[in-house]
Length: 208
Image 1 (cartoon, rainbow, N blue to C red):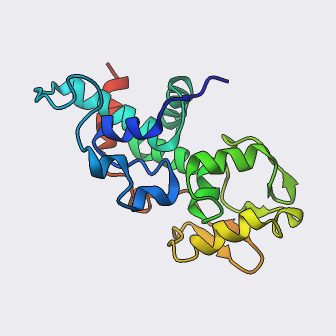
Image 2 (image 1 turned 90 degrees about the vertical axis):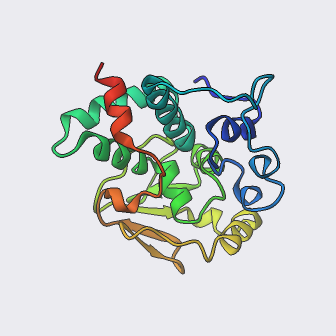
């Protein structure tokens, strides 16, 4: 499947906000956005008036890059959100949060969503006791996500878990730090999603 392979820090600069694509580096002075807070490219520092469509497009692009999904996937999630009961924008964010790679990241089992996606693909996690190596797998309330027994002793995971020990876990996930597993209590509500966007702009964009 196609995947963006360029410099990820350019994406943060383009959106003007941190996407936390490089894990711990994003919290330090080495963050590219801290050093160059303007958009990349020859005209990155120029001031431009943004149209309503431009705002909608940038909001959609920001959400896509934040969760690391491509346009086709994102559009599919939107279509699923439209068919669900409730507010479409909130449903969309709930579906994106329910991706297995995002859940692994939220639990502190990975330092970034990109790393979580890689670790899931390598088969280090199980859902309800069965290995799942599809990052886009959508978890549901009642499911249990756990790190495989053989992966728990790896030095990589020990260092990741130690570094992320203080990261808060969203209330829709119940983490057992000793067992390195978590139960999905519910789908994420809007207040559980720390995404600084107006999701209604995405709905307006796709509804045209």
